[in-house]
Length: 492
Image 1 (tube, rainbow, N blue to C red):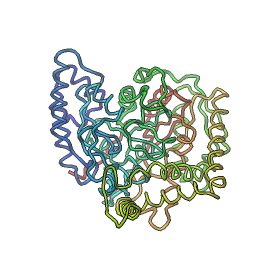
Image 2: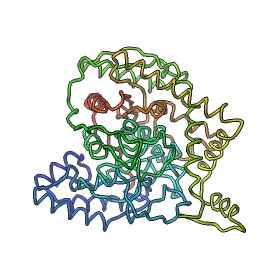
Image 3: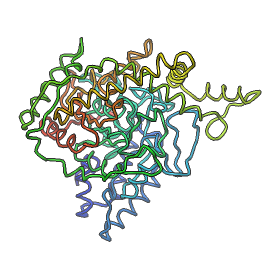
Image 4: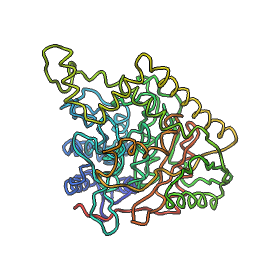
């Protein structure tokens, strides 16, 4: 029998339908792989008993001919999604051993469709990071290594555990969240596919909040088709989330293989940065050529406010984080460090519970929201955000179907290599992705090549609001031209 963990999600679904293997066998194969790959630190909690129970239930529905869209498919869940009766910590000490008594909408829809939960996946603390090094559970390792090197590399962040687990065949797909690139950047670093849907496409209810106007859940998988299958299950209106949009969920999988002939693809001149790696520039040109060969038309477009996106993002996101994280006070749930009075208890709890990066962003956010600085920073950043959104609207109004850009400014870097002396060095990893969150648009990262050291590189496609279908069609063109990447298995 083929190694069950190396199947694509679509192939596994077909094998289950044909009864080539059972959901329990598929689940057990993944649980065994997880056990051998603990050095990657992708999972912070494994749930084998629950996984096997869900797999047996899936086998029963398949036998009855009542299988759901994801019946028997083993998935990993980012530790930002509340899971009933299963520890959820946002990879922070401040949530301690918090066990929710409710289920996030996104995960409840996956279980509704028959998926199997293998465990909770590591991430940057409260999703604040670009390398998965800020987690209270320690850094996640990328399953990729440079050719001829044993140096441990980061998988990207904040959804680094999700990306690493999918790339290392420790699950067939995973949930992630993307506030400034936290799905697309790790997908590019690990040679897999990740999509940030349009803001409002997936419910945020039951997901630990970082920056509420930017956060959006989305899937990771090893192929564009697999990502489309997951997206169909995760998306949908939720009355419990006032930002959730009430519109039908398309069959995203139907977009795979559709012709892209006649589509107009924008190439934004502002994304060609000074000092950009020649490899990234070459990859970008190659991606454009692939789309052109498939019948798409390439046009140069202008997004003039792009240069202001990163500084504006790092005002808006910390401001919202400062507000959202005020609820972690040691009173209602999570960790508590006592003090002589309630104010000291708040201070002690937050000092011990939050890591350095989270404390830094809370302080930045509190500062930009404070009296005397609100107009100078937060209000101005929101005005810039409106201009960034209008840039995209102007481009799409000219008939452009999607925009092609690099996903990251480089391939994966070494653990501990960036950001220690200067946090801005780490923030620059989001330079190609934050505009999409600021404008609320969908964006997909697709593997497109390798650098000279054999590490995967990704391209990003940015779409019109709620037009993820087009991104799946275009992404599949790049995938067909590139093929699939598999990391050398050094961890087992």
